[in-house]
Each structure stands twice: as structure tokens, then as C-alpha cells.
Length: 285
Image (tube, rainbow, N blue to C red; front, side, top):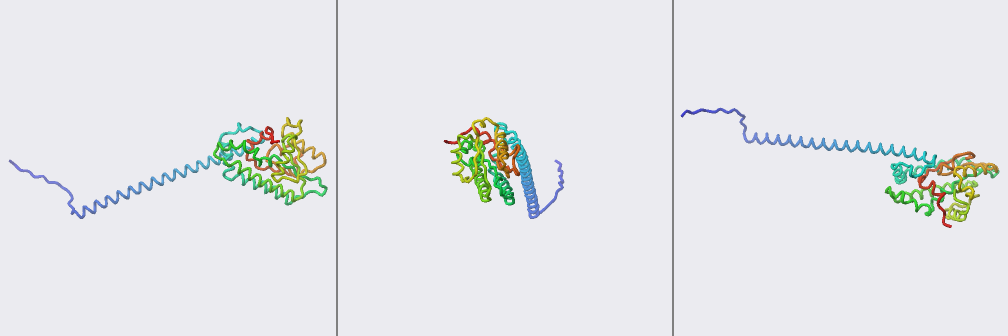
């Protein structure tokens, strides 16, 4: 039998060199894995930030849209059913996130700055007209039936908080006008037959010392509120009074003739809850 030889080529290394080589491979592998993890985390972070930017942008766009729509709704006296669902949600956020408080503070501040400069005429004929229905919203008789509309949007305390803020700033402005010796004319869209109850609620809330409280007669109850308020202003003007300012949160009180030297529109946090409420609900007798 013949014999044959096989020659194999290769690299010879000692066990020490082999150990170093394997350790190097493991180290490089670990570095690659670490780099992959870092890149994954960075990518997820960038995606989260991008998503946040989109959410903020959408929220801002919705807020701007709802703010314009709210003004449109006030001008056209739209019902709550006419509001887009997103705006009903933003109505709660408007209060919850503190924007209503900031708007109220700025609006009342503008009025206060005006009356720091302007003083009543010496003839006693200058006056300020205030919307008493803005003050009546501080009464629980009006607030309780409206709570469910805010509760459904996860803002159980929003309406109470907004009412508290409205009361605080409105009373502050009212007392400032009193201190300035301004004759104050209050008006309400409620019927004349509720005068005693309305007067009691106003006085108990701290709104006292006014010169007159004007309420609707039976003939005026079917009249459009814009016409009603316009008529009472015109009647005062004909009697020779000078309307220095008109203050209200509702648009129907601020448009039309004889609106006065200056009009102050206070923010209305519950416009579409209250707009038709005052003309359909009676005060407790």
C-alpha cells in the first residue's frame, strides 16, 4: 500500500495570543451593541419630541379656532349645540389652565386704568351701566344646573372656579367705581316680577349702593335682548344722562346706539351655557 501526505496551511498562535484576540472581538461586539442601543434611544427621543410638537401645534390651532368661533357665536347668539365638540373641550381647558383668569385680570385692569383718569361730571348726569346678570352668575341657583356640562369634559371644579374668579374681579371693579363716586345703573334681562329676589341676591353678594336697577317689563319679555338693552340706553340718553361706560360680558349689551363713551367687554367663560339661561330660568321667589 502506498502512502500520501496532506499539507494544510494556517496561522499558528499561542494560547495567550488567542485569548487576546477573542477578548478584542468580544469588546468590539459590546461596543457595537452599545452604539446600537444609543442610536435606538436617540431615535425614540426624536420621535417623541416630534410628536409633542405636533400635539402642541394642533392644540394651539384648536384654541385659536375656538376663540374665533366663540366670538362668532356671541355675535350670532349661537346655541351650545352649534359648537364643535373640540371647542366644548377647550371651554373647560380655558378655565382649568388659567387663561380665563388672565383674560379677566387684563380686562378689569383696562377698565380700572380708564377710571383712574376719567372722573364723573359735576352736573351729576354721568353714569356707568353694568350688567347685573354677570353678578347673578355667582349664585348657586344659576351654577348648579350648568355643572354637568363641564363635568362631562373632566373639569368638575372649572365652573365653580371661574365663577369665583368672576365674582372676585367684578366686585373689585364695582367697589372701585363706588369709591370714585360714580352713579351706577344696573340692568337685568330678568322680568320685573323678580325684582325683590334679584335685589336680595345682589345685595347679599356685596353689590349695593347702586342708583337704579332696570328690569324687563312684561311687554319686554318677548323682545330681543339686544333691542331691550339698546332701548334702555336710549331712554337714559334722552333723559339727558351721559353714559360714560358700559360694562358686560355679553355681546348683546355692547352693541347698538347710545353705547356710551367707552365699552368694556369682560371675558365670558360660560357664554353658551348662560346665553339663553337667564331668559328661561326664574330666581327662587
